[in-house]
Image (cartoon, rainbow, N blue to C red; front, side):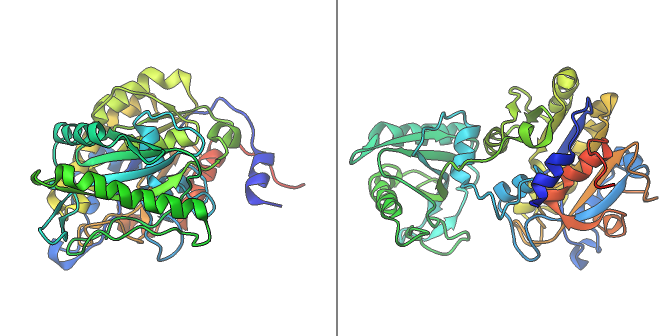
Length: 407
């Protein structure tokens, strides 16, 4: 029998409250340059420490050993969807998070404004993380002059900072395509290719992307520092089973950045808009406590600091999170999981394959007798090393949501 089908057969509907709190890119590496401490180990975290003493810990493999995940696969795994089975383009996720109502056949791309030198080589993939207001101005410039390419409508919508999305709406379109992003500085923007060379729809889509670049790049060529852009996650929306149907839990999402709202919406979570800080997110959790059975709460700033290679900023982001944690604990859920969607080590300045630490707290989690929540402690925790897609199943088990298997 399919394992998900077996879990579904055992699942019981209860009134349990579950909360999954994700510090994006939390995991890190202990290096000699930082005294063999990770930011999580170096941070002063009295509230996480108190929680750790009565919790179980472990490490999670986000996709499979050695595979570095994007944010989409990382979060889908946390939501219990095997990221190798359910592959979703980042553009779709970002578009949903920005509130775009997608239509069947729409192809979406997640884009970054970037800095190009006179030879077209990428010198800064994020254009210095331009402010959101600048991104909105640039998107308005593009949207005013590139409304259609041939018979295909082009929709451009600004996101936060350097991020935006492009939606292509027309007949005979399909993804996924390769990225128009070298994923590092020092290279030109690569030409996109069909993932399936035999697909006529993907070939048409690849030509549309090339034509879009030809039309759009001259419009912003004189802008500084954002005189170019990169595109990735070029795909159409797949069919995914709804979260509530899989787990018998009514889910809600408290996230600030559009991509994570889009991921949540993709699986049927209710987006709760408004809160902008982790303290505000926790306060809203208290307000909504009686309305939902599952809360996904996302915190971005650990990942941003890791991508910048900024150890001190990542440490501070963890400390800021810890300072707000008592707000959530005023109404402690029956099961609380605190983890990351992947590791973003400062030494790597990007996502990595290293297992992220995970903490699981409930009346039945037991105590691993660990004084702190850290990578080192998680290595010796009772949860061991497991695939991220099983975290929600462990949460359900701790909430007594499974009937006994067999006689």
